Length: 218
Image (cartoon, rainbow, N blue to C red; front, side, top):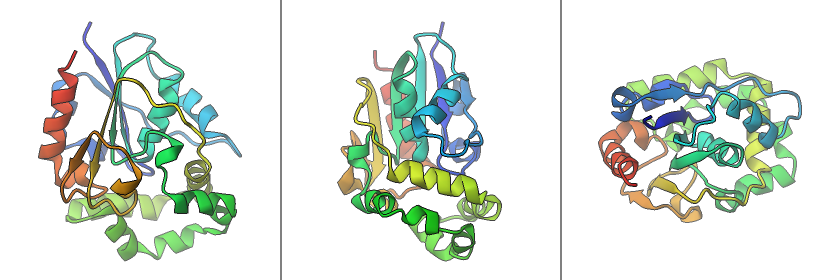
């Protein structure tokens, strides 16, 4: 049987983020949708629920974008995963920027109302690297429809993430101009010059090439 590819989008994003990657059209792929977190649910327990959507075959491949990559690391500890690909993400807690960790330690996440996020579109555009109308539209969908409880849960999950385990057969692609998760904090296998947090869309050709090279490796 061929590889089964599961991909997880970034926080609040939809499967549209992967539209320009050709493996989505050429290979058997399944999008793992975000599910509603339970009150005070740990990221480990959340990953366990998401992992239930993945087959028990040994040829599974995970592709995680941003926060989706963090979930991929957790799922890889629960399932037989052949390869894990990280795009604009972190493989372990060691790669999460220090200011996120400080926010979690100080409990500032609980002080972040959704109204502030919704009123900060220009700032969010800049941090995400929204260059086109399509990218701004995707960001708007998240901003306009974000659930306050989901936002607080996800931010707390990122700020308090403890994972130290990195899958053996992984591939990490990051952009040198990522403002949300700066490249200096991560140990990427490939850096895309000028790539921002949404390089999966605005530098899709370069991302495509790197992913396809990794997928054909034994």
